[in-house]
Image: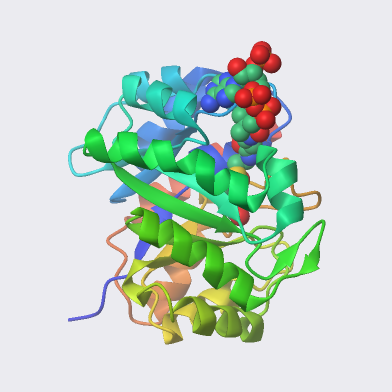
Length: 284
Ligand code: HMG
Ligand code: MG
């Protein structure tokens, strides 16, 4: 029996957050509803951040309350602080994510806090989530390169990933935010991070700006990772990472994994339909 690799769909959040055109809530709900029939176990659909910082995510509560929830799918949301956590919980998020960075420059630009301040801000979110029995995922951005600080040392990534894991994150998603990583650098970064977080608690979150995301996934598979974030249709980017193009496309990851003999549990016809919807949303 072939081994399973999970694709964590982040298109409705990481994919859409960077779109300049305001996408109607109905279209977001329709995309999530389509994705809900594809076989994903987790879909990131919302982000409870300041609407001044990311206007596209301002209707996150409406999206979460209006989607048709499929059994067995967990719907996730980003929550940078207590206000975000409370709003996500009220809207019915099944799990939340706190998001930090391995570089000071990106941390400041993205969440207006130093790395140390961000970890302090996450602590009450973690406590509240634990009290509510909600799982918390942790992101680390800029795991090889930062748009502000340049190349990032593997040890800096390991430090932040280790702190998020110690705080109670059930999984740490490692973000190549600006898509500049290469397999060799991903390998070196994973060698350091896997000293402090077990590999079965790590996920790869690779943007495809430099065209190496699929090779970076392959390097990560060799290190034992079995969860990868991707966005249908290759949507995405981060408004606070200049030049960051889309997340690696879910359908491309699915194809690469399937050809390599892994099972994803995903229906490629539904993925193709969702990718088509995503591309039309981007085109307007
Ligand atoms: P701040 O300005 O330092 O915080 O922003 P503040 O507490 O002073 O609040 C400023 C304003 O935002 C206030 O409103 C607050 O009420 C409001 P005002 O008084 O000016 O009218 N506010 C909120 N509103 C709604 N929901 C909230 C909330 N919190 C405060 N939760 C803050 C700090 C964290 C809020 C801000 O920097 C922010 O929202 N940043 C989010 C940026 C973001 O979403 N980036 C993209 C996601 S990360 C990413 O894409 C990377 C990832 O994909 C991995 C990878 O690829 O590497 C995960
Ligand atoms: Mg991202």
